[in-house]
Length: 134
Image (tube, rainbow, N blue to C red; front, side):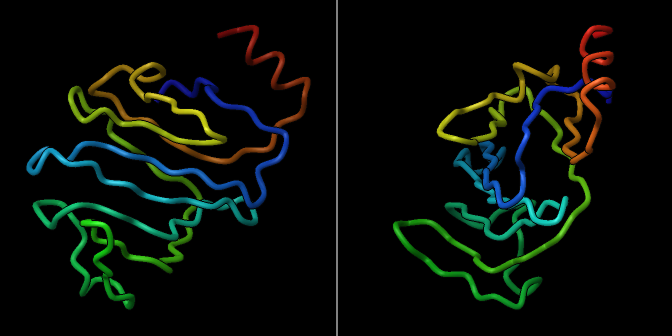
């Protein structure tokens, strides 16, 4: 919402990461897996422990869910997006996992607000100017 830069990387192509949150009804984690291709986010997999309110219905996808290790996995989604948003909940513990690090979204975005993820190329000059004015 604020346009504040919270992550910078020199190389994003083929980078993978995943997000997680605690589902409000069943209180179990939900994981969404992303890959960056051609300056787009590609949601390629989702995993969760049980169906409930707000969870995807397997009929919405061509892929069939697979039950493994007590979790439902839906692979090969390949949903391409220019950007995506996450409402940062107060108790859902929204997190992003990248490069063996965990980033709690509430450390960057006030709970109750929306985090917007987008890829944008900027020059070093513009980047330094924006970072110095935040």
